[in-house]
Length: 371
Image 1: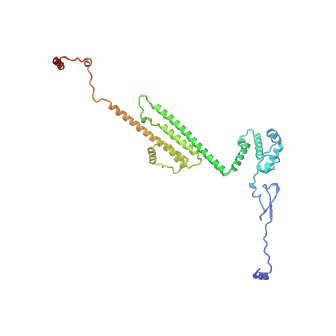
Image 2: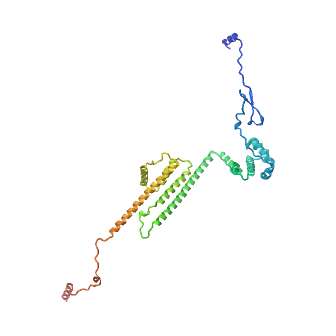
Image 3: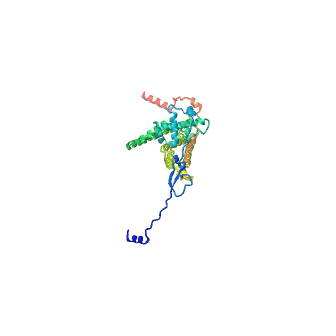
């Protein structure tokens, strides 16, 4: 202690520090505290209500059964009545904490066996007490019964996954990626084959309907009908959608670009440019500003309709060109001047040489000279 402290003590004498009054310990009890144990809480305000955390202590309503119900509905050769009673008592005491129940259960039963017995008994009692009620059908115990074999298989698979090394995880990822690639390839091949069959059948039907034995088939007659074009576009979009679904997560704009490309794959570059030009003339942007599902569907439908319209216009031009060429050919075949008619007498007359002609005289003079 320094000199200033000594002087203060000499002048004032010994001064005791004021004591801090501490609130007494107050006992609290409530429904959340089991066994009637009081909890000592340091609180300066006396408690006026129930324990503040009592609202978080939720209890489970355990089903009760009688001896008659047990003998009639719950008898099981693998379980005795005493074991079932002990199980339900522990379930009520520990609020269905089956890990603790399995630890406290007298016989050696697994957690899955205890769960299966409890849920099967509760389900049987519920159905027996409400045989014709519609609310029982949607009850969780009836709608989703406990499957002990599935639960054991799930835990076994989980333990295998958790016990894998990094190398095994990478190998599994490679196998899954290869399986996904093979599945996508098979799906695309199947969709392409189905689309090819549909297009072939539609083309065959269109050619058969328009075929004429007396007329030659020109290249313009081999144009695909609008139904074939539309079906081709639809199948292309279906294959694109199927391939996108394999990705599970994708951007809406990316999906729209893929569908537009697949829809325009059967058309040429000039036709695609005409479709874009038509969209601009109609005041429609080439890419939707808000690419929701409904907007993308309407945009694709508009593109398909424009493409079908352009194909129809092209076929109409080809048909008009054929009609004009047929008209020009019929005018060329008409004769410009009438032909002379042969007289009947000329046809019946035969040519007879005349001996008195000049030619005959010359022949006779030559013979005389030789003589």
